[in-house]
Amino acid sequence: MSVHIGAKPGAIAETVLMPGDPYRAKWAAETFLKDATCINQVRGMLGFTGTWKGNRVTIHGSGMGMPSLSIYANELIRDFGAKTLIRIGSAGAMQADVKVRDIVVAMTASTMATPSRGFFRELQYAPCANYGLLEKAVAAARAKGTPTHVGGIYSSDVFYDERPDLTEMMARHGVLCVEMEAAELYTVAARHGVRALAILTISDHLLTHESLPSEDRERSFGDMVEVALEAAFS
Image 1 (cartoon, rainbow, N blue to C red):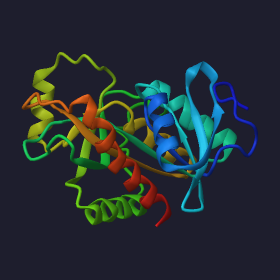
Image 2 (cartoon, one colour; image 1 turned 45 degrees about the horizontal axis):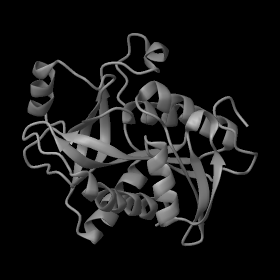
Image 3 (cartoon, rainbow, N blue to C red; image 1 turned 90 degrees about the horizontal axis):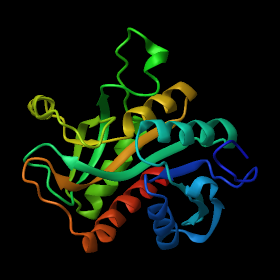
């Protein structure tokens, strides 16, 4: 047991999928895992452990934003021995060719500030994914026929952003989409020497203002979960 995770020793698998929403963690565990058991409910942040094709997996919420994810990622690694952490979440597209329902596999994650910024001081650290996981995720997504994009993303520390100039600048430099957690996940994983990847479903588009209808989200997010599982165990 740690400060924010009430799981018993051994209850968490070495491979952890991390959606932001704890109820999406519940849905993913019930949908994709066999014999899923709830292993954490502290502060309403749900976590479940079960098996997928005989492989032990935990699906645990991270909350919204980098500070929240940083707490759970650190404790999962430090206190429970997690070795592979894959963020499964939604994102807003920033390029015309990235469509709603597409999957983005984040190679790098730019950001203005993270909880880890104090570690680096003047250094502009460049958080990046584990290449082995990235390669397998791209292969799995393409095998499913899901439109997939690979490249840099932006991890924002605010949801209600009022910087259209910044959005325009990032789009000009090829940033694929915006979300709120991956940069800190990649940094924490690098610090502890474990594998990390962010696989994102495009739910909204910053250029066209299209949004994925709520009734379609589970089906589209399901593709992302399957890709994450294939990447972890292929």
